[in-house]
Length: 171
Image 1 (cartoon, rainbow, N blue to C red):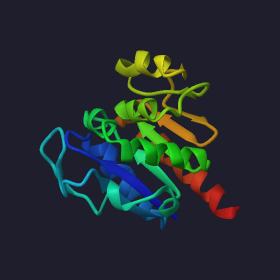
Image 2 (cartoon, one colour; image 1 turned 45 degrees about the vertical axis):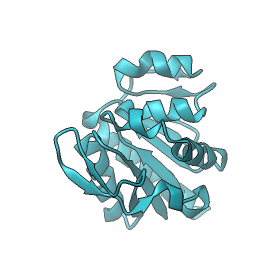
Image 3 (cartoon, rainbow, N blue to C red; image 1 turned 30 degrees about the horizontal axis):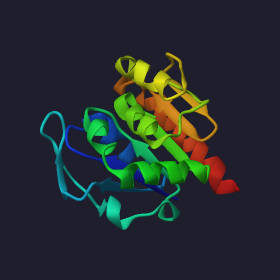
Image 4 (cartoon, rainbow, N blue to C red; image 1 turned 90 degrees about the horizontal axis):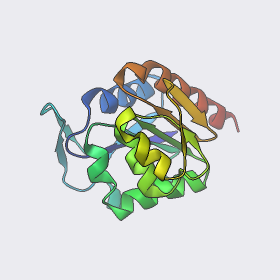
């Protein structure tokens, strides 16, 4: 199993590193995929180094994606390669997981129509305008889309991601 964790400036530290490391504890390869700048600063200035640039990956290379929050998603969704990557993973019924403001990337990828998701309350209107039903729950699963609201939801978020991937591994 191989999961991309998307990376851009102004990322939320916990929402990148908690899933990145937690999935590794489960023996799942995680890869920091950025937009090609190599180094990215979190909202707090914590530096992360991309392991692969989005220009060098395809949906066939991965079993899923984790889209962290912070303000990074507002930058990530401006890259067609990012939104195409997420859309293609979704089409293939692979894991598409987003937390907090990560729902912005889902909206811009066009994968929300008819879905039910959660996210940070400030992007509720964006989620609804993208065609989804918004719910206020710590984690919500709609087929292959797993969403959560904020860093406090990370334990539930990662638990469901791991359960999804274990189920996929058995197929």
